[in-house]
Length: 268
Ligand code: MG
Image (cartoon, rainbow, N blue to C red; front, top):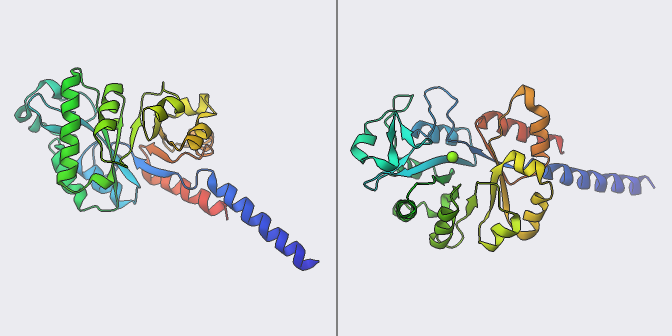
C-alpha cells in the first residue's frame, strides 16, 4: 500500500513538474538591440553583442539598414545623428559614433565579431526601407555576408516589412527561420507564407489568447517583444511567461534569464 502511494506521488510529481516547467521555464532569451543597458555598451554596438554573449543569452537582436551605395549598417533608427542611412553614402555614415564612443558598426564588423562568439544566435532585423528595390538588395547582401562568414546556421531573420519577409523567405537557405514582427497576420496566414512564426508585441499575444496554441499546432514558433523585468510589472511578466512562448525579446536580458531560471527551479 505504502509503495503504491509512493509510486502515485512520484508520478504526480513528475507530471506536475513537467507541466510547470512548460510554463515559461524553457523560453529562450534574446537581447533586444544587444545587451546595451550595461557598462560601456550602447544599442546595436559591437560591445552589446559581446555583452549578450557574456551573460549567456540564446540570441542577440540587431537592426540592419543599407546605405545608398550598398553598405549594410547596424542601427535602430533610420538615421544616426541626423544622417539618414538609406539616403546617404557609406563614408558619411561610417564616421558617426554611438553613445559609447564606438563608430556605427557595419554588418560585416558585427558578423566578424560574432564568428568568435560561437554559442550566440544572431537575430537580424531587416528594417523597412522606403524603396523596396533597395530593401531587396539589402536582403541579398545580408544573406551573402552571412554565408561569407559561415554564419548561416546561426542567423534568424525578422522584419516589419511584408515584402521584405517574402523576399527573405524566398532567398534564405533551407531551414533558416524568418519571423514577422508586424502583428496583423494570423498563425495560418504566416504558415501559408512559409514563415517560421510570429515575433509580435506582447499585447498581441495577450489579446489573441488562442494564437500560441494555434502556432504550436501549425509548427510555428512564438517570440514576444519587448518584455522587460520591472518590479512594477511583475503580473504582466508572469502572464507573458505563462504563455510558454519559444522566445522573449528583452532590454533586461540578465534579469530575464534569472526570472526564467527561477521558474525552472520552482518546477522541480
Ligand atoms: Mg529591432
